[in-house]
Length: 170
Image (cartoon, rainbow, N blue to C red; front, side):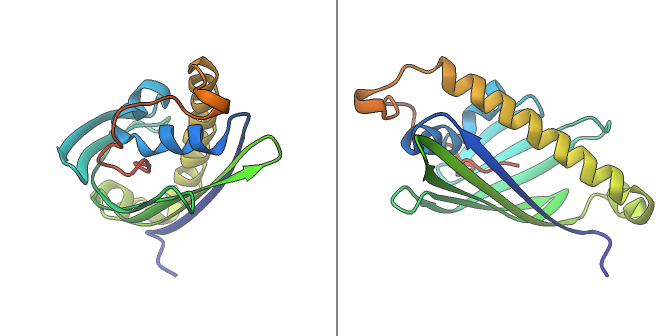
């Protein structure tokens, strides 16, 4: 087993229409406004950016994020990334009752030296740290969506163009 390889999955149920959820998740530039552990996002070009993350464990993760897929019809946002972590992440946004279910999947290999040195003893801590970050992101997204004005027929209001991260800078 490669102790530096991780797979994460989360499911977020949200009281907002899929179009509104997709619009927020697609705008990677705004993640720091609603997700506390996303400390910084800086656009490099139309399809890529640099991001910095920090959760409970006191280390930063720095990534270069590139949009791989942005498909509103299928509700899919996917990115690839390199840096302290190498891999991919994907949001799949689907209708669920009167709201939305957002599935998050991520597969990464730790490249940061500290994470590699502590891979075996630190693995449970790193997984717990990721779970805390995801719970905080869910709380932040719920609050952000609740504060947004609804567009016509409950759709997302017009907003900025999707960010460089394809919305998945996690």
